[in-house]
Image (cartoon, rainbow over the protein chains, first blue to last red):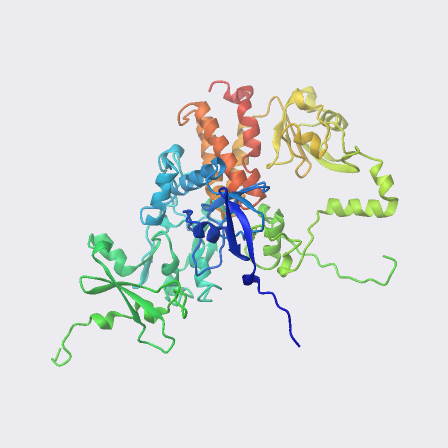
Length: 313
Length: 265
């Protein structure tokens, strides 16, 4: 018996993007369709190796017939769709969303956003000077917190350094949910972190805000791997940045296979001054899709043990 | 149904979060997740509770169904207007002589509804009505002849929302109510999407600036900034909370000079 199956990926559909007719395979998202067309689209919460959560709203586009703008990252293309990526409505939303972010979060380590801040003429100061920071971890959902004072509230707070492997600087957190997703169902299934609180007081937290060392964290570092704004960072990188010695221009990237087990994850070693300073993994890697475990991510100190083993220590 | 059709009714008690009135946040909450709205599409009728097609109805709608089953569709449609048949519940509160829940045919004017509740309390004059709740709009005395139908209130840029009719007399500090509404949305936003999470805070800050007179630029600049904010929250937020969080304030701001406490600014 011959079963007739129609592969969804086999069918193609056509839609209009910015006046151009585009043919894409069924199942393609508007973001993928835009990128195929070479249309630069800002993203923040989107990453190729995670399911889209469409929360940051910087990728919104205008779809004819839709009451509101739609997130390009998660919306699938439909036959006959008419999409505008640079209409006045789209530009206004992208500009304001970026202004809301830039006025509340430290985006200085989110270089991918820089061209868009310029392109959309982002002026975060329109909402006033930043207000004094307040302790955010004690805030309870549903309890109204008085404003910090005159000025624009920010998510500024001290850096959390509670372990040897990575730091959490939530004054850089845009709440893109990527770390939560990577810690949860998308990669690690550890669920050490989740969103706590509500509204502007929403924040990434361990259970009861315990230090990482008391949490369920297994230090796979996959949250660091997906963080788009430098809120989660290798302790080695953080300390070099503090000391002013971090220099990405001087760093080389070397791909190798993790020596620990038989899975065969690709490690990209970021090396500065002949020292490994950070380890990442390519997102398109067929084994780990960019995700690693504690050994691959952090277990490279032995490489740098320069002591001569033939000499007594 | 006339046949041996059995089904279970399972009651789930909510914990009071405003956002869990949004149908997809409600589903997440019932499933045991954080009460955060889902992006649509897919809509609940396609992918809903536990991934199954789901219909979400208010109790008021289900009660109407009962009415239609018992009395018949034609009898039900006897009430109301041709475009909006049947009746609607309105909850009248604040400065009316007899606050409470009123059921009137669709098409009743706002003035008739207020009269039904005994009019403005203590013989005072009406300043404004907040129609539809915190996510609704302010309606002013010259708009009292508006028929209460979906299309009728839409023609004045308002909505019936949950049927809330909050009546405010001349002694009420509407600016304080606006500040309260802004604080409410800042607290009740789930925090998932940027336009709503940060937008509701920026809106609250703006109202405090207007109250203290320390505006950024002119009053006109502030109103223009709020209009942009409202537009983007409506356009780019995930759910109805963000879409409507600027509505009430936007409907009142152009009338600021009407409010006694703002006359000096």
